[in-house]
Length: 177
Length: 177
DNA sequence: GTCTATAGGCAGATAGAC
DNA sequence: GTCTATCTGCCTATAGAC
Image 1 (cartoon, rainbow over the protein chains, first blue to last red):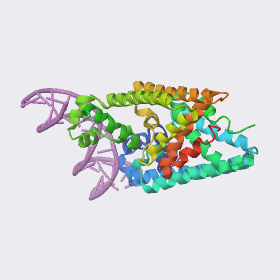
Image 2 (cartoon, each protein chain N blue to C red):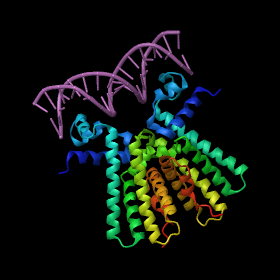
Image 3 (cartoon, protein in one colour):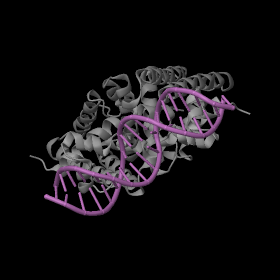
Image 4 (cartoon, helix red, strand yellow):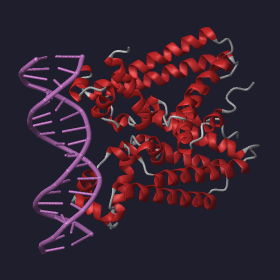
């Protein structure tokens, strides 16, 4: 039994990934949760507040996922594969990366959310750089940026083509085994 | 003196690149063109019609740009650089690739527009593959996909960071000179 | 926490005059 | 081609009762 506030956030995350943060309304959330829109406002006063909560929780979840991978998976190449598999899973549900979506909606989000988004991608790159470093790459931060760019772009193309293998093929060659 | 229909399309293209296709209204267009919303409807009966016109014109423009580059620029590496410079120019205006933006808005666009978008990216990759082929790459179509993915993703990140060099760095290494 | 009721604004779209 | 006028519907948000 998850509490209402969490259910709202879960739902909002899903909708953002598929339709974009501007692609759903408080009414969509309310209908699905089974309450009224005014009750959604009780939990998140404005939609901008919801956006910030969404990105901040997502960044924490990313950090947690990294920690888990670092603990459970010995090989850096396997860690990368695990992350990619996660993102590939979005395609089957016609979703993309939530933060990639919000980056596309850059013009309509608040400075606070922009900062949180930038932080998300920097965290992502920092962790990737560590993996590439462990794999012996000469310039880990550079490869990390290329990797994130290719991943985010490939998700757009993969959903368009309805083919998750686009993600694999876009990231092929980064890990030389 | 450009005609009204073209001015509408130009304006819609700009707005799509910055705010997204769902981020502007007929009222935005009307105010800027200096006519009423009903007049916009005269030129493009529905917003879905406008979307299709937008993508189809954009694909034709891309083809024309490729033809010009093929004619005017001898070195394939220089052609690629020219294309990248074009996309980098978007960042200063807080814009991204129009078709990348629409790909993010995938869920809210018609099947016809989805098809047109897919065609755009396939054309793009075909031309890129030709350049990589001329440069002696062993697997041109594969590199072409990686290149487009990295380009589209890097535009999202570059605008977020307010730094066009993100695009350069994301595409570094594709052309080995 | 959730409700009812309501506000003010904007969306896409159409009918018909000029 | 452009206008006025208008429709229906949805949006975010708030006040106040329970």
